[in-house]
Image 1 (cartoon, rainbow, N blue to C red):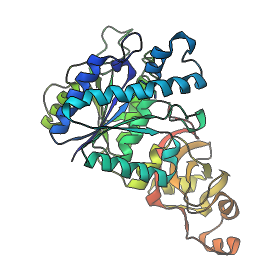
Image 2 (image 1 turned 180 degrees about the vertical axis):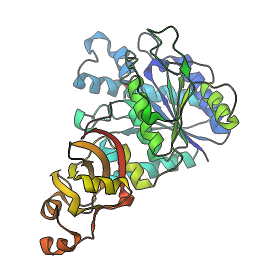
Image 3 (image 1 turned 45 degrees about the vertical axis):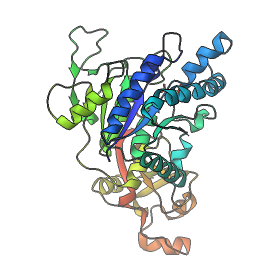
Length: 378
Ligand code: GLU
């Protein structure tokens, strides 16, 4: 069964007033149901909670502060799910609600639980509708935008593809608002080299082109393709599925091609997290070793900070302080403090025990594009 994650933005689902647009909901449910009938499993990642909440609360609660947004989403999220439930009912499809925060991804056990639960929903033929749990999400635990959330969900469920539907037709080679000769790009092969302009945001959406490109880039690295298209085009999901199956012919939207390889579950998990629990700084020798797919040993570690135990997710930084990778550590922060710079044969002497030579095993280590430590991709 092929799995698609379809992210749909507030700009597609709302009327100008911020109210849910029933026509769009109906059309989207019909479109998605058709694709499910063809044997696909579809997970919807939907925005709209804050927009719908605002439309009901009126001017008394503007969506301008985090506490306001938390309350507005608690008003709007039930409306959002009701709109989906009603729209899928004619197609005899049951909608489930899944609300996540970044914390559900940070903890491996919670991550696996969420995945198992969604797998079961898909097995039953239900349509999971995912959103961030905005009502309880404070900045520290927030994913922040649904483009990023949809990439994290696509990785979690091991999707075949992510579809991001917004109010743009495609990604252009230049900013189409200021360049009349801007052309849509139908396929981006090497997203790691792609630098985009920022197209700005819709009224209620949090992301913009930047977060879409960033989501696609993250997924390309772990072997999942992303297609960005206009959610206002009639039957867009069916049209895209036709396009994927056909492989040739006219192209709709922009597809960001995945790197050829699919990577293992643990690496996938680590690479999609926005936050890590600590930083391990390594010397240039260790940097070239990990770039050659070797494990990280204590000898190449210059420094460590953060609060993490064995099994924690840490950022690996070079001497300039740039994050070059992420990994799951075999030693806690205090243990690494005691063994850093030492040869593997000295670990026992320093700690009185050893958990093995590798501080981070190569199977649990993934290189990222160089970016500021703990910073989000720009
Ligand atoms: N979770 C937000 C909402 O439902 C939307 C986030 C976004 O637009 O990316 O209102």
